[in-house]
Length: 627
Image (cartoon, rainbow, N blue to C red; front, side, top):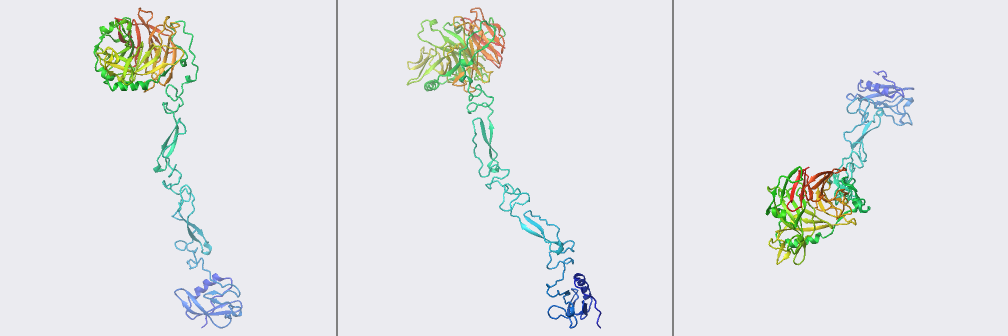
C-alpha cells in the first residue's frame, strides 16, 4: 500500500528539509516509497536501502512525473534528490549539503561551533608553551575553519621571550649574555678584546684594570692622583714643593734679592725675610767620595756606629746640677783630660733622638758632640787635625764615650783621607747622616754607617808608613757629600740642628753675629731647610730655605725649633753666664738664664727635653732641661 508523501521539498529550505528527510528515512522499512512534492508535480523516491546504523537512506527514482530527464533537470518541473540533497537547478553548481554547526567534526572541517569543548571545539585564541613557537588564530568559527597555525620564530627582536638560533643579546634582549662569543653584549665591557694593561692619559692620572677578562667585565678605570708622592711626575692638587719633589719651588722663578733692614732692637721675636734669597746645592762630589770610601773599605775593617759603641773607652762624670741652668733633667762633664784640654773645643751637639723615630742606636740613647782643633794652642803640633766627634752612650751610668776623627776620603792608586778643617759649630743627626756646619761654605755630610777602623798608634792623618793613621784615634768617620751655599747674600753656617716636628723633617741653620762679625749685632739670620723624608739628604739637589728670619738677638750660638717654638742660646754678654731665649709662634721672646759659654742645641721630641752644652775649659758640660 502506497504511503502518503511525508515531506515536501521547497527550494530555499535546504537545512530544515534535509533534517526532516533524514529523520523520516531512518524510520521507513526497506523498499518504502518517499514522494517529494514540487511546484508542478511530484517525484517518487524508492528507499531501496536503509542504513540503520548510520540513520541514512539511499533513494532511487521511479519513472513517472518529475523523473530525471537525463539532463540534470526533473521532469514536469520536479527536483531530483541525490543522497538526500536536491540537485542544483539547471545551469548552477552542484549543490552540497551544509554540515557546519551540526556538532560533528566532519572531514572537511577544522572545528565545529556546536562542539563546546575538547577535540573539535573552535579556538577563540592561541597560546604556546614554547616562546620560540608562534601560534596564531586563522579561519573562522562560523564556517568551521577556525584553527591555530604554528610558525618557528626566526627574527631577532626583544620582548617576545624567544632567543632564535643565531641571535645574540645585543640584537635580541631575550638572549642571554654569553662571555667568550666575541661580541660585546649588554652588561659586558669587553669580549675577546679585553685590556691587558692600561695607560694613564697624564702623570696626574692613574689607570688601572678593574674586573676580569674571564667574566668579560675588564676595563681601564682612570682616577686623579691625590697623594703627594715624589718621583711620580705629578704635582697633585694640594701638594707643594715641601712634600712632593714633582712640584716646583716658587723660588725657582721668584726674586732672590737679599733682605735688608736688620731689627733695631732685640726681643721682638723672629722677623720673616725673603726665603728665596737662600739656597744650598749638592756639589756633586758624592760619587767620587763613595768610590774612595769603597777603596778604603777594601783595606780597612768596617765598624759602623754600632761597632764603635761596642768599643767605648772613656768615662764621663755625671752631674746633678749646672750653674745657671734651671729645670735641669740630666747631664755630665767630660773626663778631666777632655774637660781641660785647650786645643780641642766642643761646639756641636745632636742625639739619636734626632736621627730615628725610636731615638736609639743598638738600643742605646746616643749623643754626638763635635770638637774643633785649634793648632796654635797645642805646643809642638805640626798638622791640622780638623774635627773629632765624641760618641756618647747616654743610657749608661755614668755615660761612656769614645772619640773618632772626621775625614775627607781621597781616591787613587793608594786611597787615603785628610782632615776636615772647619769650625763645626753645629752638628745634626738624621738617619745615618751627620750634617756638620761649615761656616762659610754650607753643610758637610758624613756617613755614620761607614765608620772605619785605623791604626790608633799613628800620629799622622791618612796613609802613612804603609798604614792608615788618624792622629792617634782608632776610628774615622768619612765625608760623603757637601751642600754649598748658592746665594749672594753670604749667609754664615754657625750652627745646625734637626727638627722632626715639621713635615717633611727639616734642618735649622743660623748665624752668630756680634758687632765685630756682622753689619749689626742683631743681623743674625736663621733658615729652615726641608729634608728628604727617607734619603738622609736635603729635599732637592738645589734646595731653597722653606723659612728665613732675622732672629733679633745677638751672639746666638745655637738654635733649634720644635712645633713652631724656637729656642736660641746666646753667649751675650761674654763670661757673664749665657741666656736661653724662647720664641713662641708669632710672639715675642722670653729670656731665661743658661750655662756660661753655651753652644749648640738639640731637642728630644719624645722626652720633651732641650739639650745643650758649654765650651769653656774646666766648665764643659752636656745636659738637658725639661720643656
